[in-house]
Length: 180
Image (cartoon, rainbow, N blue to C red; front, side, top):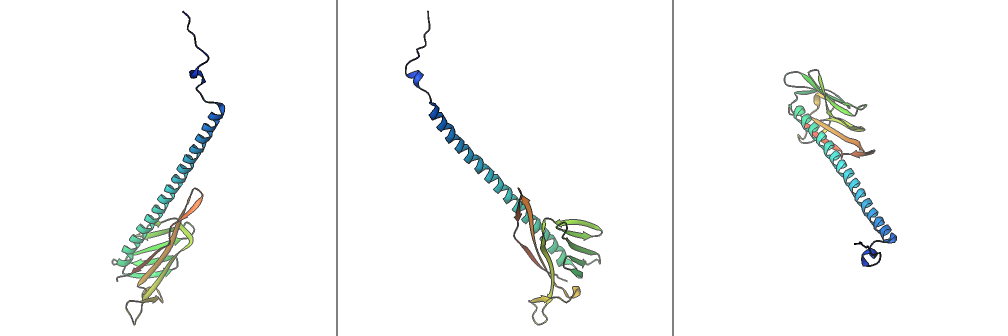
């Protein structure tokens, strides 16, 4: 018994021609390229959003810590554009110092220094002090010295590079009124 495979018929004519295959591969390549581009764009966007969130969280935590400690301070003993030195109720001193070289804000208390905030842009940090107006207890004007200061103004902006592009958080500002 011989088994024959006929070379003609509808079964052997069903298939793709070279032109059809080229079109299918071309369209598939375009679809795959679009999917890859969308995936890369989404990954970059999610990474940038995470970066913004992290910078905002760091700024918020730093401002919360500084607000709590400055409000409880007994007095501001020394002031410069990059450093504030306070005395607490027990007579101990603590300070906040901005290091422009490293882009950090450092808290020092009892001989222990900790970085409170990092990634601060150069030239984007400022401390200012104000005192109450003698005629109106609700307005402030620039203080003549550390001993008369009742209000601490702080501004900063943080940034971090994401895939070679600098991501910048919005400017953070805080006004803290000393209670004592």
